[in-house]
Image (tube, rainbow, N blue to C red; front, side, top):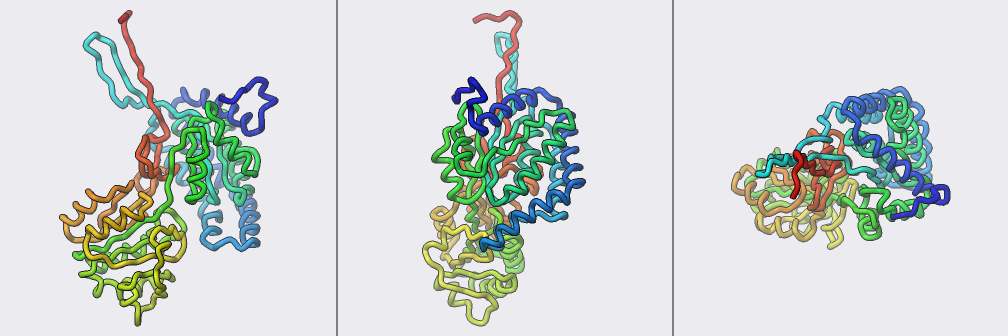
Length: 427
């Protein structure tokens, strides 16, 4: 554990972590009403101070455009009045959710008369390391506050002005509601040194959650001494089975890929059963072409490309593992459902896979064999989302198998403790 004596000798990052720890201790026993009041104050403040936030965000967007940042990244970075209203709405949705803190996970009276209860408690101090999506700043703060946690936010330098403005608004609202303002802090500094310090603040920070690309996540997982809940990249697959409704399959494919291609639950690979390829692929390629999607196809997909609206290029080995986050999709024809599963097992990031089929047997086999956080049957991959699942604004989608898996809502931001109540019992 990092020495804290004297505190003035510690770096700004460690000082912020110390303040977070003190704030977390104050938050833990608060009733739901106090936390909800703070969240509603945050939502109101976001709307009242929209122009301030948009102005700061414009500075980040201008810098991103000046250095040739991809349009999909700029889309994730951009905040508009409409998006801010939606973010405020998400915060109000979180306020309306049940408070997980104090929930009895299990409990019983033991044979000796001791009362035993396992109850949910906050994790404590949660550090979030994330890339150019300033909406994460608010989502993470709201979920952490609701679950009684203090949060240390370390966004990317590309969103520094946006995150600074947002955290200023959040802290003013939280402090004005009577909660400790230090429950929400931006990690000081824009250099990678501040990230490394956060990753090594074991004993001060209880858990780190990285959100971003594969490189960021790998760095945090491999270099952090603080426990990490690993969120994963989204190489999501849509498999169109031999017994699929073609209209449905086309609609699900286009929605999964093109509704918002810059997010982790967008589809990156299409797999088509050979028995339906002749009927499905020409229509699918036309629809993808209309949506502006470039198809990276294997030789059997390329054979169906002539006369369609899609731009189709030959796929390479790199395409099968790509998380494009753009208007691109890899595509292959497979000989069977089992062949589709084998392809998914080889290349998936473990995020979301979808099957389109009218066969209950095929759907059942696919859901049994595919081991990802979410397996969708006749539904878009875009539904893998805390808000869509009714959890409120998620803090991330965990692709690990310990503690939390899939969209992480409020319960995933808690741990548990046991309360043992006796009447003079001794062992």
